[in-house]
Length: 148
Length: 159
Image (cartoon, rainbow over all chains, first blue to last red; front, side, top):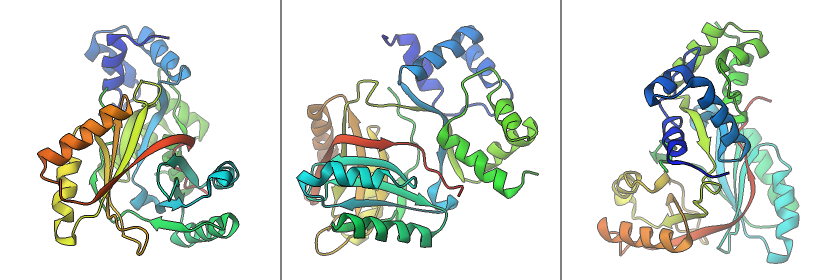
């Protein structure tokens, strides 16, 4: 599936200032001068093809509960095993391998700080790796929209 | 008024995904046995008070050709960290910029900026430009490219 200039315009539009109204796509379609049904079908296709990760949004972790960025220094030969262990926690929502001695980086969110610390301790204990707990102190950029 | 447990479910819906269809909020309201107007009001309030940062489509950068992603970490003296954080936060290609604690002895970095680009070369060029234009060349930093993605989902809070 190829992305057209019209798709890019649409993808840039639907990332932010999304109308919170009953029929939001009608507003966007009229702004972009497109047919609403055709546009909704196109968005559904773009989602199916994986260009759109989800239609939803991003909550402010600080106001929701506890969250942190954590890192483990995993020996290369144990990467598959430990990443599977980390992924098995449903409180883990991002998990990436990165180029550093601390090579496995993941975000943990939980309803309370106590629960969060419990999960981190368990991951540390079961992985037998050194763990960095790096909660956000301050945000300098909160707009996650990404113009393409 | 929406009961607390359903408020949590509505917030989690933003992470797990709303349906792409003609009346998406009505569909969610029906699913949770709520009134559509109450759901709309809830999301508007949540955006207004900062509980929700954004409602809309979340793109898959990699799928769109932005295959390279680096977490750039900086060791900024305490009195400069807000200033440098704001400079980085203003850069177009920086999608996230957070201050986080240092962890001695192995982790001296207190400022994190995420940068996406079409390839590693483009990201490195962008980092060099950002360092030069903002006068950050003397600040110790490291670039952690991601080499594999094991998981990417929205956050969940409801138990």
